[in-house]
Amino acid sequence: MSGTNVDTKTRQNVEVTILGQRMLLKADEDPRHIERLASYVNRKIDEVPSGGAVASTKLAILASLNIANDYFQALDELREFKRQVAAKSRSILAELDSTIPPSSSKKTIG
Image (cartoon, rainbow, N blue to C red; front, side, top):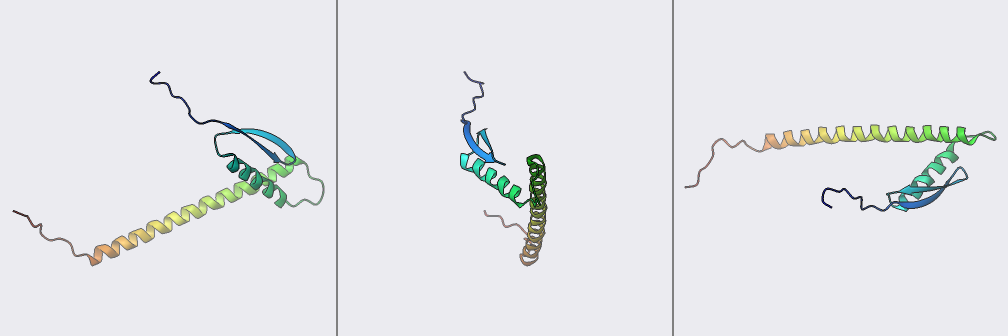
C-alpha cells in the first residue's frame, strides 16, 4: 500500500464546559492542552464586565474580542522582539567585523 497517506494521530474526545455548556470536542492535541484553552476562554468570559444578566452570545462575542486583542498584542510583541534581535545581531556582526582583521592573503600549504 505504498503511496497511501495514513494519519497515525488518534483523535481524542475531550469534554469541556464553556458558558455552562458541555461540549465534546475531537482533537489531535493533548487533552490537557484543550482543557487549558477552555479554561482560558472561561477566564476571558469572566473578565467581561456585566452589570446584570447578559446573553451568552454577547458574552462570547465580547470574550472573543478580548482574546483577539491578546492575540494581536502578542503578535506585535513578537514582531518587536524579532526586530530587536535582528538589530542586535547586525550590531554584533558589525562589531566582530571591525575587530577581526581581514585576511589579506591566503596561505597555501605545500
